[in-house]
Length: 332
Picture 1 (cartoon, rainbow, N blue to C red):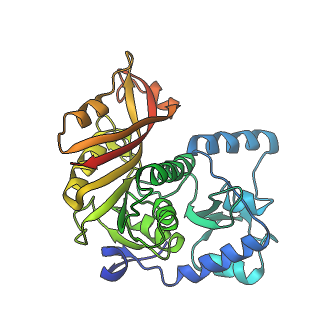
Picture 2: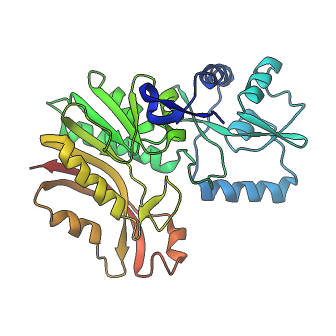
Picture 3: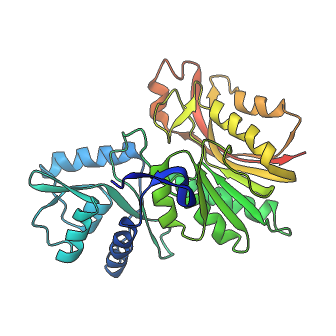
């Protein structure tokens, strides 16, 4: 893993040294693209079930394909012929493959963002149990669709000049916004420096800031703040930790965005909200009480995601489902 350094230009006050690893990322992505590699990332839970199923069916798992190695995070033999020798040595030297006995374990995954468009992107390996894991999956793809939808509906005639992607993670939202609005200044913000190493590679035209929320942003008033926030209740992992009921962090960040948006500026979000047994939605109720915003869009994206969370009687005692929401708020 890259070493922590002070690097104000790259990531704010603290960041990861990445100059050494980026050339290896580029070489790997080029080699995989030449092999027409594609991998669409499932949820960590589906990933675990697939690994368990393949272990039952195949026995001890050793990567047989590039998708096994850099998609499913299945270790490769140290004698693998999947990669050219020079690239294999570079990956080991950069700790993107680490030795564990007779196998090499990947510390990254490489995934596609589209079935039809070229492009491969780096994110964290499975399992995603580390507190600072940084990866994407089905919610990343949903977030991109929500941004496309809101961009076409909300700002058809007035393209934004200043956009910020909050909780950017590996940078997929920031990358997508920079493509939707190529003339805009796009900034990505995340509290996790490990995520920002990946983000700076995945979206090289975007400026990134390491910050808890918007505390470190001091740029121009924003036209759009986009956010795909953590929304799992009582979770300690950075990418999931939404607060005691899962919405507290989102509400806090929305409040911070108010101070950075221009009048008439918009907040766009893909998030998930806990819905009570009788259909109650405390998140929407909290938004409706705040006169600083006008709710321009509050649309159901998916009626039921992360259903496994409903088994937790402590964190979700009165919740019937987590509903994915497309949200647009306008600063009054």
